Amino acid sequence: MTTTNIPPLALTMGDPAGIGPDITLALWAAREALSLPSFLFIGDAQVLRERAAVLGHDIAVAAAEPETAGDIFPKAIPVLAADCPAPVVPGAPDSRNAGAITGAIETAVALTMAGRTSAVVTNPIAKAVLYDAGFGFPGHTEFLADLTAKATGQPSLLPVMLLAGPKLRAVPVTIHIPLKDVPAALTEDLIVETATITERDLRERFGIARPRLAIAGLNPHAGEGGALGLEDDAIVRPAVVRLRAAGMDAVGPLPADTMFHDAARATYDVALCMYHDQALIPAKALGFDTSVNATLGLPFVRTSPDHGTAFAIAGKGVARPDSLLAALRLAAELAAHEQRAKAGA
Image (cartoon, rainbow, N blue to C red; front, side):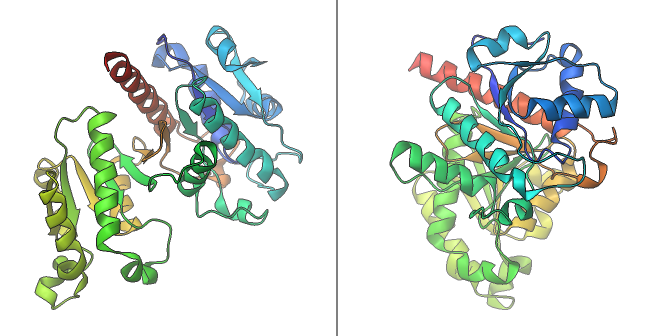
């Protein structure tokens, strides 16, 4: 099992009716074989116990704080309580538990910003369940940015969603908005800001000395010289010019339909895409079980699996933990890199 001198990861429970408990239990059960980074689970301990019984796991769960989690981890899952007020049934989400779900995220962020945990790893949430309870954010990414701003008293940087897999890194410039709203939301400044944050984090956290940015066009064939849309020449191209003038290795706008084959991917370190599915479809097609969602632009490391709650298979013992494993490993790697960089500063 991997041991480090950095604090444990903060792993949130996500929606307890989903597969978050399933994949957490599966990974901990194989912790030695996987050299699993140690984590502090922030959630409902009774949910873990009940799900372990359903899945046939003989797993111990113990109350913990960040400072004791490392010693507990080899013997039991260390848990910091975020208890659910309503009964949890696998596959049956309940908006009465929304406060516990978001509370776990808030606790993870607070602990990590205080240095008591080394990074935030979030199990999947179901936004519709949270919306029913008044949740006011499009998703995890925007919620994390708001928590950061409140904690620091300063406006946070633009939160940037990075899908990172063994074959592709991809960033959507616009994220959780309807496709019909993308052209109006897409601006030169937004592309430049997203790319700048992406380039910085790839250098400072991923250790890529000079990141190569491939900027996708919005329209088919990157607009075909205006015949298939004006946005690429009017918005995307000027953004790329600004990025290059700032010293970044950026190219585009590139036709999105030719950006993701093997030879094309070898020419860049990250693809910046103009809307959600333009980035996430190739990312998931190339690494559905191994890609990780990482939020850039935050003052702490945050990763998550790139899949949802999968309510239909919760509690059935068939959920694959690969993406959560990749998220935990990437979070540990980035946190360790960040610590080494600070020590050398």
